[in-house]
Length: 371
Image (cartoon, rainbow, N blue to C red; front, side):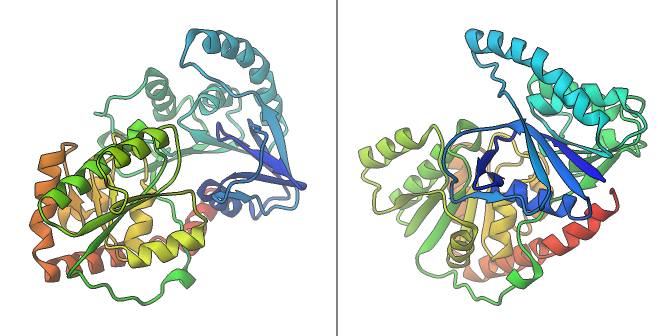
């Protein structure tokens, strides 16, 4: 049997293996373990393999390379329109030849696949919507259109749509299923002890893009230092804001306080999270913020803005700190907790207890229900 993935995630081919973003590949490896072959319809990039990119472990995996689509400026939009004409028949042909259609949303390839799957009502399908499903949130028109298709049971026959969190528009729609993801296994449940007295270490994990607001995380740490708190911040990730963040850190003489650590492998991240006290992610939008879940797994108290399913993940403030995206307000909110080590320790324990319910083994068992 064939399992075919339709995704906008860039892929690379190196030494007869197919690579992509690590957490995504780890999840896909669980989806595909019971199939004879898998095909990945996705863009292909050239270049070496980064530390956070992993290989598919299936022995019969094939990448069906398609062009990347960009709609951020007029010239690229015109090129992408012509590329779509080329991509549509490729998606159609791949859907004909597969037994299970798996679509990754939101994204431009996911949008095309969502439309084309309508013509295959008899095929078994799963759609992983990895973005913010909150119907009240402001989102691009293409995202709203994808969600409109996925809500419609007539247009998604024989499909299960997996969504982060539970939302009011999911009621009486049996094709919409609350779901989650996982990063660590049962074997990662090591014992540890954290002291919440003295210096506090904060970690930021994620792409250095405007949507993740790494600049806000830095300014919060800067403000806390100015108020006399001994805090530091390690930033793991890369992206278009990296140069601007480096310049800001230099201009404010924060080199000994804020450290841009770049992209690291998962073993390094696990070790760093064990030594950290807080994981901070003041995003504009999220799906399932794995950075928070990963930090919580190792006892880091999550600090985040109340977007998507984040309030639920943080127990509405019982196992994390919800902040508004404003430096002074956020700093004051965090500051209240720093003076109470016992409260912080209990919050850390609650976050660990919650996060360790979501392991790769349990995730695999959940996936099997849809195959």
